[in-house]
Length: 440
Picture 1: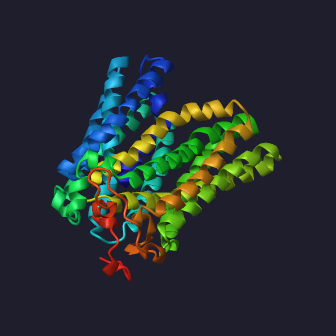
Picture 2 (picture 1 turned 90 degrees about the horizontal axis):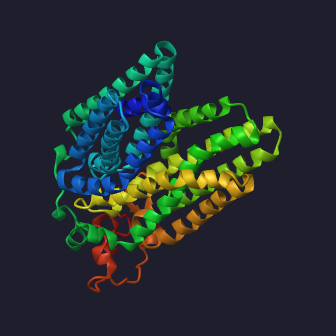
Picture 3 (picture 1 turned 120 degrees about the vertical axis):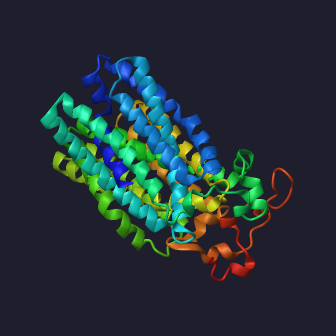
């Protein structure tokens, strides 16, 4: 993961600049090709879920890294719009498969133990890799000019190839690439959720996916709109956005593990509520920065990035764990792909949404986002009543909060009239005999 992130950190800050500096393509052509390729992520994410369930999470991660390595090698020889579009589509296919499979692979590696520490470690490594990669890319460009751009892409391609090789060689704790079967789940649960129709009938999880679209919009809005707002509206120096992103990377690298440890024993749903309150507070700070002296605006901008990073770290530990625990072994790829579609949709919607809001002033830009954070908080509270995985304790695998031990009314399954709990994935069932401790 750290090697993968190192390569991504090298390329992401200069992705558009690379093509405009090394090819004869116009800026509009580059943007159009990358945007069309990004649209491929929606169907690619769905297909990746099926591939992951069929061939296993480890195999999918390996294939995804190899695909991205091939795509970045193709970037080195891009000379036309069509060649850029083809290479970008290959990269997007690999990227989509990676984000579907890696949470499922973490579940396999955890082997029934707490997933949150693994996600905390991965988050820390990823932020560190992105920070080091971005710094390395800046140095490469300062020393090498156009050759520096080429070196960045070449190193990125190599990083994906190395990541694929290391994933292939490390077979110690994730089932050796074992392909999940429906029988790995619990009877009816596995049978009912091992196909797309079964996943799409899981209405509480569909609600969780919609909730995650809200999370995605807030996260992407901060990255996309706050740097522009701080410079063009607030009037802060142009170096402030870079500093804000650097603080985000450092906090992510240093804060993920301590935050995970501090949340131990907390109910997942309560933690998610707090995370949205914190993120909402970040946008309040951004809004206020437009109406105070510049020195105070700088402090508010730094406060906002600390708050939003803290909220995102809390979400990053908990949300993929909920998704994994809701699914069965035979459907974990599909569940993760549906969850990732929320972020793919956010990637498409957020740029147009935020540029529209920015044109209407600070209040019109940031008040809706604060309201969205509040709406997310309400949604979390309501969904936790129907999604037992949200009631587990952080770093306490399959320990349900005391409030979750009351018996829920049976909800009729839409297909055959049986109680919905009979179709809940194995990780989400609450057995009366297990209620005092709920440990497996």
